[in-house]
Amino acid sequence: MRRTTDDVNLAGRVVVNDDRLSEAVQALLRDRLKSFEQLEILLLMHSQPNQPWTLESVSAKVRISPVLLHEALLGLRASGLIETDGKQHRCRPTTEALAAAVAELARAFEEHRAAILGQMNANAIERIRSGSLKAFTDAFVIRKGDRDD
Image 1 (cartoon, rainbow, N blue to C red):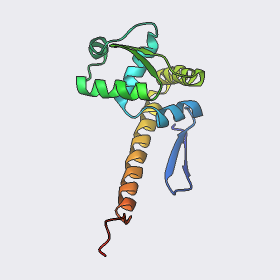
Image 2 (tube, rainbow, N blue to C red):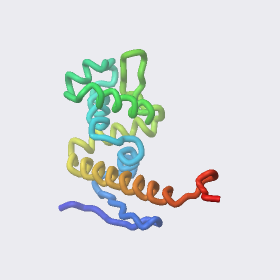
Image 3 (cartoon, helix red, strand yellow):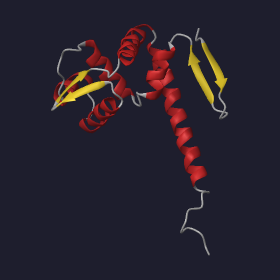
Image 4 (cartoon, rainbow, N blue to C red):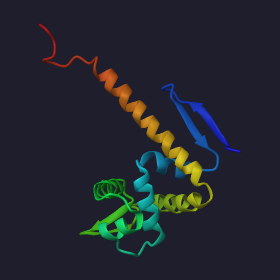
């Protein structure tokens, strides 16, 4: 039985909260992990935190194209989840709270994989909706120099 609650936030968007995932894990998935590739790479690096990972060694384990792999690593670094030293990468979250959330995510992934993947899908759909709404509203903004005076 899937235990979720659907709430409508102030912007009128439906927000799916899965009871099986803590708020910290949901926030990590929503705010810092934007792709399944990032999730897979983060979990791999977290499973061996002292292992220095290169593009080649990560690619051999997760079988992701070099372009997607490079983009995922950049995103993980920008999100404060991995540390990069030259060509080597390690799971080194920038705060203790992030480190705890990553550890909790790894545990939750073992028990509630479908819930995590479902939450990531919901987050991706919400990002698309938000981006589309912003693009639509931006179309009606009159900028200096755009007016027919």
